[in-house]
Length: 201
Image 1 (cartoon, rainbow, N blue to C red):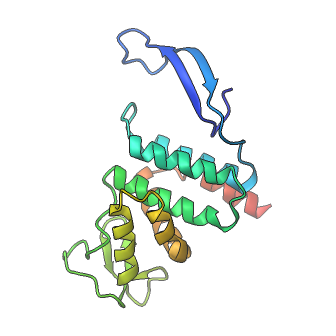
Image 2 (image 1 turned 90 degrees about the horizontal axis):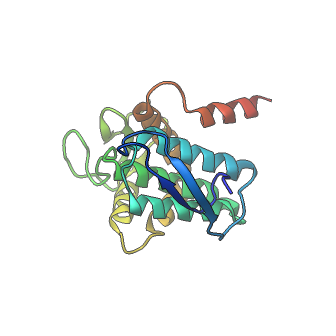
């Protein structure tokens, strides 16, 4: 039963006063729903797990984020086609927002100035969203950042973030990669290193 990326109902007893890190597992029941992802989808799922372990505080519940995670895993376990990159980018945005590490995507962070629809902006770890310079390889026009912010604000539509990420996931990927690694700290994410090692074979 204890396989990665499978929905389980666990029962366990708390050790001591409950503050210990190791508890006694009493039972694990598979809740069904999907098969184990394979290939790139499995690596993507392990990458999400590593992000959660590195960024979330232990025992801090995030029900909305859990629902988003479960939805991404269902996509990974299906014939996902071209949906892999958009679902990962949308999950990264939702995760950063849930833990308060994503600035507003509707304004320039340092100046709190509105975005111009056709001007390009880039997201960086220490400065937030700022006007892109000629040296910046990654960036998005203001109207696309604003569309992402509206999608993140649309709690009534779980797929809004996915739809907003789909046309811009290639531009988002390098910016979110740097932002996530900055907040995860050193060393490099193990799943990212594994992907690099596999590509080098």
